[in-house]
Image (cartoon, rainbow, N blue to C red; front, top):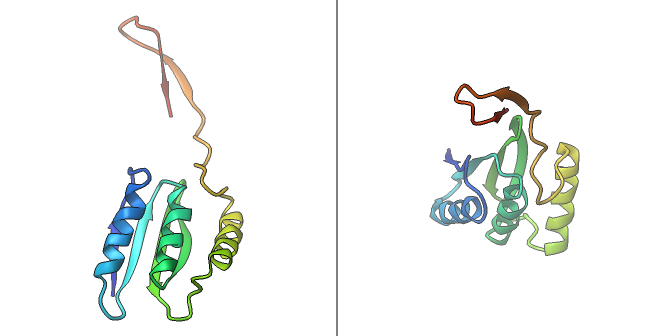
Length: 122
């Protein structure tokens, strides 16, 4: 059974710290699903999970939102270069550069009713 950790709206280092805390509490074959909208967490969470013996899958869960599946895996590589290589390949497949956020949606400009100038909206 998978626990779900929703860290949408949080920025580093909190998504990674909360994920590690949850991983340390898992028992047996429990797994963890992490929902995030912070692209840098796509690098930090898998890296820390690998140190604890967890394999990570990354799936797009919506525009600028991802679901990380963390499962205990005795064969999961703890070799830093292997983890980084696998992580880089997956992020490239998803079109996300490591440690960056996706482009913001286009802005639209509207005049304000109170005369204080333009406001920008997504």
